[in-house]
Structure formats: structure tokens, C-alpha cells
Image (cartoon, rainbow, N blue to C red; front, side, top):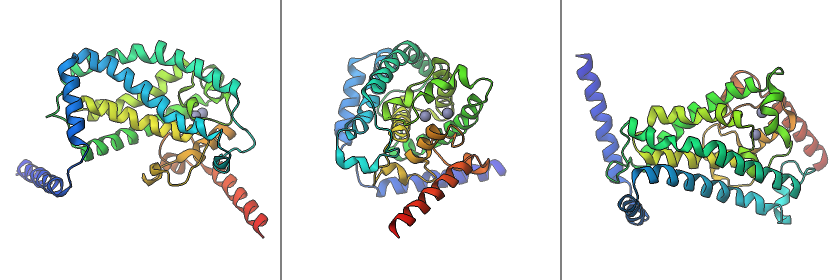
Length: 294
Ligand SMILES: [Zn+2]
Ligand SMILES: [Zn+2]
């Protein structure tokens, strides 16, 4: 009886989703995307798509998302949105960061990307257009991946700050006290593996199509580059996400070293009160501004 009840609840949920789907307008970009996707499927093997496709998506998205923050340093108008105004970006630090990034991307991450094809084969994850989940399912899956990764990141990141191990691994990521977008993946190779593992847990839980790998990598890069950008720009669509931490939150972590350990959301730091120094700091800044206005 219970299983019948469960089946009918699932069926009702499925019918409700189908009904909402039918009401939604068609995405005008869908035909072009379908054409491009099928073109890729017809001309490349699954191995090429999983390996070179994933490398291409990662590199393109990473440097594309870093570009606005990089350009902001040359625009005087944008300087009012810079979080740590007294610490402008320097060529020397950006060049050092860029070299380390290339090493990390091609010597650490790329060998891991080679595993993508074997992962999709092992779990029989489809690549074809017809099996692709709808955009809102994909959005919900990315959100689920972010919730899981955020929890992993919070606890492991906090552990990496432990005084007995900090200097061996995580110190590298904290080399710059005023972060900039490109610094998002500037880290010790071991950190890339330890914190990067959180990226794959959501994939193991939710992946029902290869597109989730790319959608989630895009979301995660956008988020991590935003929080490292050093700029708190207005109308940032990421702030529509409930409990989104944002650039000021992680910028404070780089400035202060203690607190604000989560990657995407604010809840873990709130639960464990590791955001208390940040809240005190914000109050101080607020009072300072109010005094200035008076
Ligand atoms: Zn840290
Ligand atoms: Zn950071």
C-alpha cells in the first residue's frame, strides 16, 4: 500500500512538472543549441567530447569569467566597487598567478579531466540530445551540487586552516590578501585535489547526462571567480540565489584569515558562528560610514 502511495505521489509530481513545462515559453535559443549539440555528437567521439570538450569548457569559461574583473582595474568608474580599495591589483601578482594557474590547469586538473570519459562510461551516462534534462531540472541539479560542495568546502577548508597543517597546503591560496578573479584556482596542487573533490560528490549523486558536468562546472567557476573578484558590483544576478555568500564574504576571509570558510552559502558559518568576526567588521564599517555622513 505504502509503495502504491509513493508511486502515485511521484506520478502526480511528474504530471505537475510536465504541466508547468507545457506552460513555459519555448527558449528561442533552443533550436541553435540543439543544432550545435547534434553537430558535436555527429562529428566527435564520446572520448573527445568528454576529454577535449571538458578541457575547452573549463579553460574558456575560466578566462572569460575572469575578464570583467581584470578589465575593471583599468576603469576608474569601477573603483568605487572595489572591496579593498587600499590594495590595488599589481602586474607582478597577476602574472605570478597566471603562471601557477596554467601549471595547475594542465598538470593537475587536465589528468583528472581524462577520467571524465571513463566516469560517464562506468555509470552509463548519456550524451544524446533526447536524454538531456530540461533547463529547470539542470538548474535544480546544479543547486543540489552547490549545497553538497559548500558543505564539503566548509569543513575541509576549515581543516586546512588548522595551525599544524596550514603552512603546508592552504597558505598558497592565501598569498594574496586582496583577491582578484584569476586567483580563484590559485592553490597548492594538493588543495586542488582535496577541495576539488567536493565538486564531484554532487555529480555522483545527480548526474543523468553529460551536460550536468558542464553546467555545474560553469556555475561553480562563475561563483568562485565572483567571490574572488575583489569587486562587489551592483545588480549581480548571483545574489538572487538564496543565502549566497558573495564577494565581500570571501574577500573578508582573505583579508582576515579567520572565519567565512564556506564557498557558496552563508549557512554553515552562521550555524558554527565562524562569521562572527565578519559581522563585527561589517558593523564597524557601517558605523564609520554613518559617522562620515553626519
Ligand atoms: Zn582559507
Ligand atoms: Zn579564496
